[in-house]
Amino acid sequence: MAMRGRRFLQIPGPTNLPERIRAALARPLVDHRGPTFRRLLGGILPRLQRLLGTRAPVALYAASGTGGWQAALVNTLAPGDRVLVPETGHFALAWAALARDLGLEPQILPGDWRSPADPAAIARALAADRGARIRAICLLHHETSTGVLSPVAEVRRVLDQLGHPALLLVDAISSLAIDAYAHDAWGVDVTIGAVQKGLMLPPGLAFLAIGPRARAARSRHARLPRGYFDWERTLEAHAAGLFPASPPTSLIFALDEALRMLEEEGLAQVLARHARLAAATRAAVAAWGLETQGRDPAHLSAALTAVRLPAGLDAEALRQHLREHHGVVLGQGLGRLAGRVVRIGHLGALGTAELFGVLAAVEAGLRACGHAAARGGIAAAIAALDDSPPPPAEGGVAVDPKVPSGGGRPAGCG
Ligand SMILES: *Cc1c(COP(=O)(O)O)cnc(C)c1O
Image 1: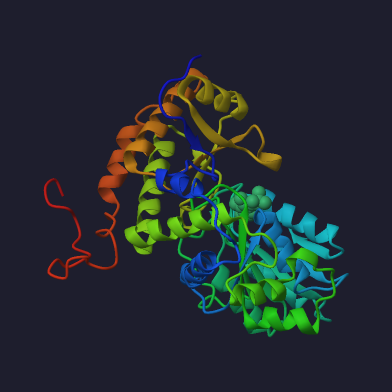
Image 2: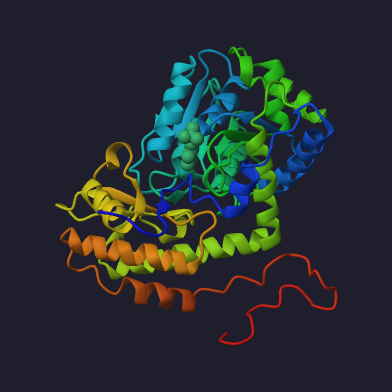
């Protein structure tokens, strides 16, 4: 079928690229050893620290998120080290597989792919680890295959209570600039981020916040080959406004612009907007008589909603229908959820009207694919927005000092 109008790429990252990002990507390149680039990188690093909630140094890599996982492992660990991986879903198992491939010994804590990592189960595994063979916990803040958020600070509390020396390595790739995150306050040793989720960029840049214990492990303990991912080489180059090798200059331009967009809207406002879009989506899902993959509403991420489809409704058939008839592309079910789950991404540069369009298409598609009960989702979504707190006024800083910022609802219709 011929498609007209905008296509909606509602996979949970990469997302629709905002106009401003595309313009930044189109800028002519500059000398990546010259003053313009140095100034650019020097401006970006402290803003990434703010986004991560840390004073720890940040290293950027030309890599997808997987490269960030690898960097965290090879800089902190030695061959044969055990890493504890709570099985929150597909991405947790993928990180464990990478660890095994690097010569580490992943110990997987089984999970049902509907729940957060369980601090009590982590505590039991650590308590049973007499010789402290577990050198790191690989935890996903947001497991993107299920839409479930795990309690990072509680895992740190478990480590502290047991006095266990394992490092806490956290993947925040699909939660940064979407759900609240705090590297320092939560006691994380390494946080891994990437730019193609909440940061609204094409894939290709990963970054790490490197806490002091992790940095010390690099010199005192780590013995895996580090190669390109040696973070000391990267940090040393960054200190001079450089990358150790050619940087993805266009992505650096775009990252600068993305951070500016987030700062103009205000990070608190960005998180509130995501929370509202998520609440509206979940109201629609409930109206359709369907369930989210995550069981506990208190642990759902604001990045996406993973929807469990009724038996007999093939997720891939629904996705194909939506793509062909409405130009809406949802995320597929990953791993053992293939064919059974669709993931509606509502992250990045997205507004309510766009979300209504997506939800209306999904509702129509569900009915066309045989789920006749899919009705009333848009009304439910609108009602949920009525009930959820409006985002605070945009921007943290008033441009005109006579006009106070954070003034709440715009005048007019409330
Ligand atoms: C997207 C994502 C990754 C990404 O990895 P890529 O190598 O960029 O494909 C890793 N972890 C999580 C939680 C993700 O959402």
